Image (cartoon, rainbow, N blue to C red; front, top):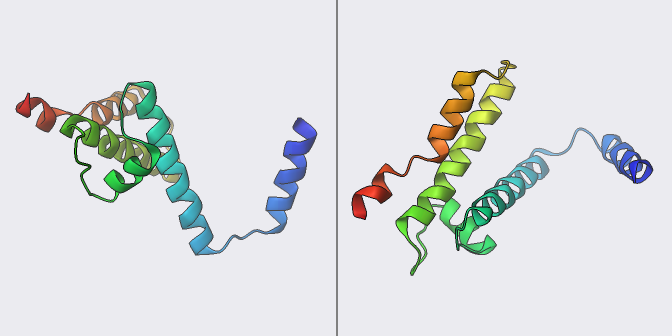
Length: 113
């Protein structure tokens, strides 16, 4: 398994630097999939394609505001983590709590219940 992984990494390294549009596409794919799977584990009923649409700012009929906010909040947490990495900051307790707070920010949804 590691040999195959190393081989694929070498192939990828030979294609670097990747075109900007390729990097954007990969990042978008990762954000959508990571968000979908993380939220599905927690019981969110949005499908993968619905998650993608929700991330574009469109609401899905028959789905709760809470489910939409879970998607949006997860993306915000990802962007926050990316910013921490970009600044090369060591991960602190405060940052972990901030990530948690971003993910669980359902104040708008809770006001409708």
